[in-house]
Length: 99
Image (cartoon, rainbow, N blue to C red; front, top):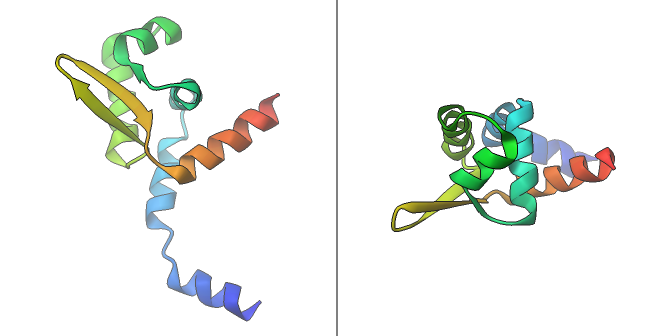
């Protein structure tokens, strides 16, 4: 128990809190759920989610801003994937609970 207390005192959890805050929207959770199975571009995400491209871009910017996802550019195409192992583990738990 003492080691756990010391660990909690040494860890600020700021980055984790920011990531959790970014996950606090159903659309962002849907984006991440889709990215769990495979990397994806904006056009396909937009078709799947049926939301305007501008709205999707705003959600992607929030997720990217806190390090949850990253975009890899191939010419004009940007492919997004989950970058954070922390979020990957959380999404695995959420998906398992939803089943």
